[in-house]
Image 1: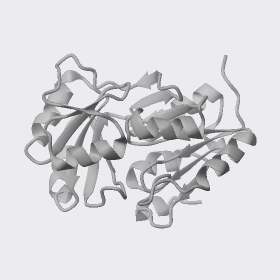
Image 2: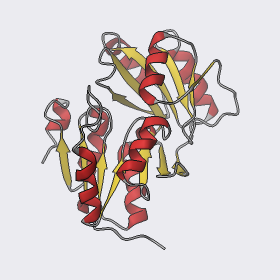
Image 3: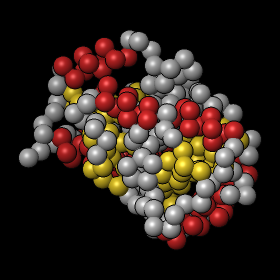
Length: 247
């Protein structure tokens, strides 16, 4: 039976919920007020559904559904996978091969397992940011993957962007984190996977129309969901493209 809610408030993590100094203390009481008013709160992030991000989801709405992996996975507050856009193994091999000479390459399973091709300082920093243990080495061929990610120096991304966007069957989402300001995180997911598609799974579950939902975000990978929902809120220091959609 579909659970009813007054609305769904989607909240991005890096640059929105989490700033350079972590999560502000006033955030959790405010989200609790939203839940008390009949709203569901859904974390909507590029991070995997484990570690710190799952902890944020459990604190925001332990009985809710939450969007992870740039929209390629929807998990319950307990971490159970409700929806996943799994990449074909041939695509995983392609994006890994193309990225390994230019970036640190990561991969993520639907339930939030985290793999890194090489042990580098960037990978160690990212694992600490995520709060998720990393498995270093070649990915097992039978391991289901919802996202391959290139961790790239910001100065290198303009040169690599045409390469990423030339891969058929892939959607590219680019995110940033104030915790690693010198890098950008290039999420390569199945074609059509986005925070908006993940959010629609959550909206359908709760029987909420998109016009009765809201999103708080800051970056370009938030654009699809900012365009989907009825109310769009963007951080003052967010990307210009995101600020242009803000209500």
